[in-house]
Image 1 (cartoon, rainbow, N blue to C red):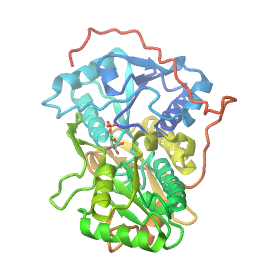
Image 2: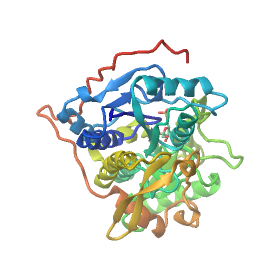
Image 3: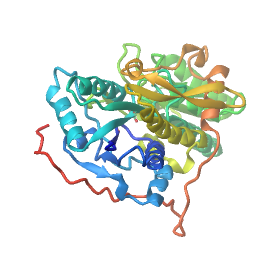
Length: 420
Ligand code: F6P
């Protein structure tokens, strides 16, 4: 029997732990050398597959693959590139199959969010139709935590931990300056249309009155007057106020407070820059001296303060993806199933890609406090386990983490170039 090769691609915004998933997948495939061929990886995601730029991971040492587990960023490169419907983008789907055929690919693993699940699903359908069946497995990842079915998404727990820790630390700073200087600190976090990351900021609050005093969620339109009242009250009661604002917050008319006007390949608005808007509202209405920060890529790459549970789950998803492939599955995605909140227990489950594709899971209303500016006990129960445990990267004598950069040697090309 000729062993089929595996093709893995990273997709969309990367996370602090997407490489832990790659590590789990490659290590598991290497454990099954008797049944599986080599693992190739698309250079910069699916774009690399279309351009027949396939990285041969068999050329990477065991130690370098192991080091992916603690290295942030996307080790093979990622991209935002949308494959549209099969009829509209037929040439691109045919090209994928042509590349699969040329390189004896039997298994395709697409590591991404909702859009990527959609692509993996479509590829699973078309590969059958075009007479070259390939097993397509989605592998979950997104810091936004907005995939359905899975209890949490690899990447989220680590970003949640970074944000909760940052809120705690920055608040201690503001508190010490407040009697004569800064009164308000505004921290902007990612998450697009879902408020999971903003909610995680709420974990910094260990007792009533602790920061953050105000959280602004994308699930609720901003009531500016109520927000300003709450900020003023916090300053008058505690001397200062910490605010966490999600990049996706909208005004009463449904417009993003911060929309750069740019769109990515999926038509998503590029968000970011809401913190200065909120800070400006405070300056003009209340006059309090304030500082603001946009956590942006810092939160998405903060592997140094990753959550151990998140790293373990990211690795487990990569490993499980190979196990599903070995069981002959296609059109599926491994998921995290929570079996208990306290003590936190979870196991690996499985979902149909068709049910994951293009669906966003928002924060339920009962996770947001009645006044709309905080989190509830139910949210805390859900969130707390996800940030638990530390998984520090090894540090070198220079005082910096030892992150790996792969060789990324390409497989020789066999096909004519493709016009994208
Ligand atoms: O989807 C993940 C995410 O980090 C969002 O939270 C954020 O809005 C977006 O990606 C940013 O994307 P990009 O890095 O392509 O600008």
